[in-house]
Length: 571
Image 1 (cartoon, one colour):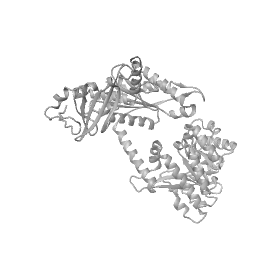
Image 2 (cartoon, helix red, strand yellow; image 1 turned 90 degrees about the vertical axis):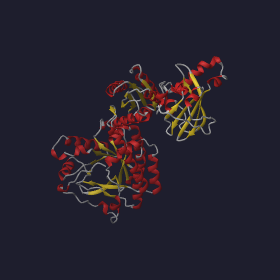
Image 3 (tube, helix red, strand yellow; image 1 turned 135 degrees about the vertical axis):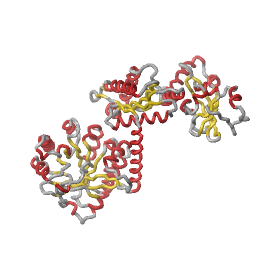
């Protein structure tokens, strides 16, 4: 351990600097000196005993992590309650003062003073309650975040190696939304018991918060940690959630990060979190081990989000209009508005590169409102009744309970007929957030807006969900259109979609139309409206609307097959 000579200006202590350890070893007060990040540079024996470590094991470790609740900067004094043994606790008074380029911590045991006012007959129960409050998650009885962090940091301090495992339920919000929060709490308690029963002695299980759990696996390599994670993940999948709307199966995603002596607990936790994020991003219900690529992916995502935030604030987002064409007359009956990032920075990012990051972060909530508001402003500026727009709604926005009111208030304030604005919800998002999708669709349709189910056929149980969603139109997934002119099985599927749509009284739009022969095949099947590069490429909305009044409804320039470029038919 490094030698450190403390100077204690303003603390009431006088140390000549020749041998601080000799002076402070004789006191019953615990002292520690840290750097500005609260990492230990020196402790006296009393502090080391308090932390249950040897003095050299404390070196470089986070004092607030080892002494959960200790302040992370200057504080005139606070009192902590900590566990001391299996069923005992201690009261500690902690003070933190600036010292050179770090801090001096002084900790005094004031247990006897605090307990004088307590009836001895009540003391045992009182101590047990304090222990629970200090270290336990109140819902599940597992270790809480600060207690689990302490265990991880202490294991790193003693030179141990192992792995940290994070486990997070997939779409747990649906359980709370569909069955209520009491049902969600019961699932949490059941899950805690299931996880506890499947871990070995020495494994430290805790709940970090919400539906996220963590396991410290001492002396465990990453390969073994993955096997443990799979065991836990399979156990979670076997838990039935019953009541309300039938039985639901839940799944969990996991992230694993190895650690060794010298690692920082915050870095270990961050690495495991990045691996967990990769599991979620990779399709969920899987285990991922951290590698450096996850950090690079996260750094790129953060950069993308910074660009999106700046674009929202400074006008770097643009809308492009893709025409929807009536196949019989080749007349444009509306435009789907597609989002583009035009912030002048390199590399240029397409929607497929920035929208997933925006959706995962929640920034897409602001973006969807910007898109809807910009579309409404354009309709106000160009009151021609034949000008109609469709805008896309993300899965996250379906959960925004105020989005419907936002749209309808803007339409009413602008005096725009709701029928001029349509909303497209992907089938996958609708199925994932069925109750939210139904609620939003009912609200908007009741006011006169059009509601389309986008990418229809891409998910499971498509026709089952049709009767639950108050839609006005279907957009056939482009995968069924891609080979429609080659006599493939897609012909039978598209015909079935068209027949069902007619029976339900809803419109049908085909996308990804890139050849004249696709148009002929779709017309034979009864599809009346389509969009795609063959029928018209997206163009900036400002250019579209700069044309003379009404000319945006004229037949677009059809592309020759030899004109085909890299497809951008996805929004």
